[in-house]
Amino acid sequence: MDGAGAAIGAGGSHQGTTLVDAQEGDVDTSGLSPDGSVERLDPGTTFDIPQPKPRSSFLTASAEPQPVKAALYRVIDETGKALPVETKQEDGVLLLTAQADIAILEGAVSGLQTLQGRGIDTITFTNGTISVSFSLAEVIAKGASSDVYRLTLSGGEANFTLADADITALLGK
Image (cartoon, rainbow, N blue to C red; front, side, top):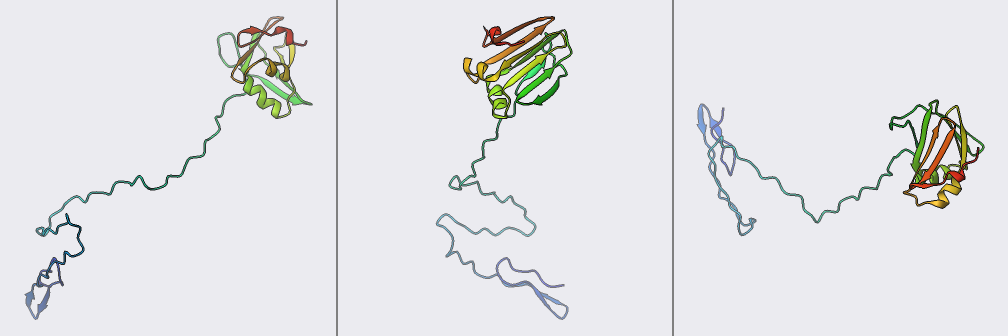
């Protein structure tokens, strides 16, 4: 075992069985800032080291905006509960079949614009009792992208609205 080491300087040593403590060196404070200091602490003293704060001068990576994922349309019953729907797409026609007495197809015009961009020209909606079709282009031309359309099939009747305006005349049977 060696003698006690110095805070500034070399470690302790021994000569034979005699422990030799290291001599303390002088503190070189020439590199300290004007408000800097050196403090001698007793052996075993613990202290918290303050963590540096982030500098605002660092460049931050701008997050790429992520597209909002939203349903292009939904099929519900009169209480707003989602209905199972069979979907088929062929030759620019999207066929939606919901087996319910009352079935409602609703969505925003922006969803119709997306479907149109995917090659859909017409939607045919049926509940097993009545089947109606509409042209996406005609509905898109009548409203803003945020407007909501609602096609209700009830029994043998159909009602079609866009932003609360009746557009049932656009339906083909």
